[in-house]
Image (cartoon, rainbow, N blue to C red; front, side, top):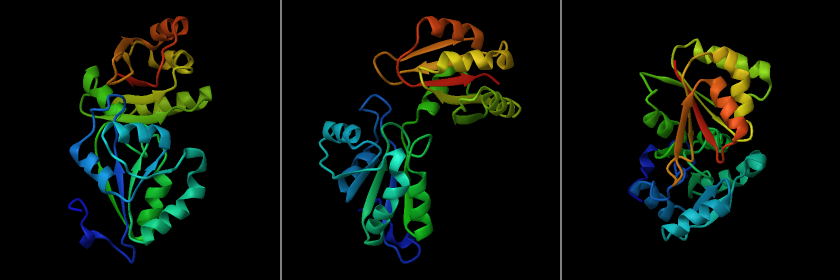
Length: 234
């Protein structure tokens, strides 16, 4: 496999864990390298094997899949490490986008590195980067917060700390909680521009901009569908 370099493997283990980014919506958004890795690996480790099989099928790939759901990640890591110990190559995927970024996989990546296996990144789609690119708010830097805490006081503290850095702030939010989150954040954010990116790369991709207060009112009346990426101007 040309994408593997066994000479770079450290320790006694000869396995390779490839962290593979997959499309966030449009199945055409996958790199040639990612397709090759998925074809050549011994197994694809997937957050939800049903979702990943649909992607593999769309590209004519018949790789074996192993589930690694977030709720059971720690229990399943040892069996995957055993496969790496045997010299296998595993490709780690999540339902959409780049694994480990607000998705499962961090425990497996850490464990593989600690065991001496080679971990390689196969970069590609990421919702936060896609949203920043089209928002006009990217600037010279941004602070990514993943999913915000649900407790109002913690949510405000996290946002305050991020805003103090002077960068655009980006986070993910469930459509069911988005209006509430913006309502809580509105006094802190004031007149800062907020951009909400929804259904990125899909047919109904759209962006909404305004203040947090304005968007909170609009979304309370008409809740969005699909996971949202929220950007706050510096």
